[in-house]
Length: 572
Image 1: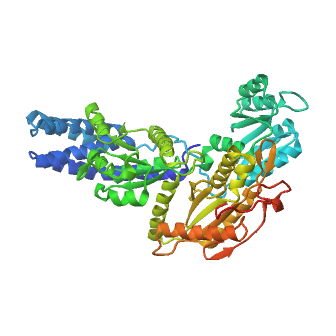
Image 2 (image 1 turned 180 degrees about the vertical axis):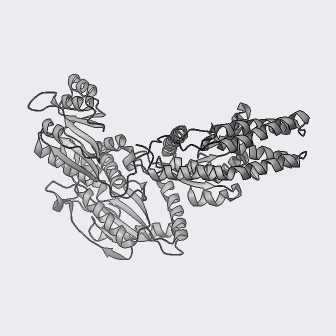
């Protein structure tokens, strides 16, 4: 998919703006050169040449970059050697400046931006469409219902022929295909192989089957399967597999801070990264970076080496002084080609070095690769091992951050504590492995059913925390009650037995002057009230909000783990 038209329009406008401002930049370079033999003028000359070397080719003027780079190298050598420009160096710079000015006057700007690949933007409310092909229509309907609890929209087909002749929906995310059908023991893989070969199918395919033999698995592999799941299907494992195969659905947008004093170039990088679905923030004045860090909280910093008032290396060292940014990737983007200086920048705080000018595809690829590695590393440090949600300390830390954001933006904020009902009895009745599966199922549902902006974490045991920015109490209670009802309808499995589990929830809305600890305490009090009033309900702090007080047995005619079990303490 090419970059959106509005992004290309913005890039072309920046190119035109750069061309118009080029004469002023050349005049500033001439002034610095004429001021001559003092260190400050030489540094200014080098700084201007450095900026042109890194930006010219980016805006379709490679000759500008080439000549400016030669000027930069000449001046840099003199500065590094501790002397002013000698006569031959002055003549060389004068000649290069003349060629640079001629190139600027004769350059025809071509708006030839490459077709940058754009990442699909998944908006809140988008249903995740899955096609399910299974001739066991009863089992298919039940699997579709169970996946529906996790926010998936499932369309079923009874035969491969019906599926093959169906019009593919552009929102299709994945296909679940049985292996065996009445017209062939491998009819499912055969159908998929034909569609893939004809380039009529380009989404992940998960095969589901009662067959566990190698022949069936080989057929599925040769058809291009993404996963193979044996029947009966454990819905939690299916959801986890879909999450793994469809990361773009559940992943939040990455945030990149661009530190570059040349605004046109910074905006060029910003629009390029935005075309790939990355949120950006521009810092042209390095002295203001601390406020940007606090407000924007980047996942990666993209920074020039040479900035006014300080160097990029110095700024990187300052960023590393903050514990929260010790591991955030810092990528230097500069026209500096001295390998020793590049390695020195990495040694003193950087993670990578990209050389200007850089192609848009290369910039996107390099940034996305760094972001992916950072996500993996951060997940090990910040996330709970069982659920993959934020751990106790990080969810509390995030609550502090979101309170500050709510105060600054003057937006509502809600916090909820969710606790599984009668969880001790689930462990006692079905075993601790089954209890762990129930915990993971709830974690999966919180990821699937809540909004991208919401933040979920595991507080400990069977207790979860949920931060809901830009949400008032009424909306928070409504959303959480929908999740409560959906979770209570999920079939849980243990040793061939089926059961349901519910949860209770306490909700609190932030009020001015209230701390994060106060919110935790208020939510816990509301949770206690939900437990004492019968469980399986959502309660707003100070008042009961019992929208749909159903027990699991009322939702499905399946034996419930909560039936006939008495509470044994406040958090059961």
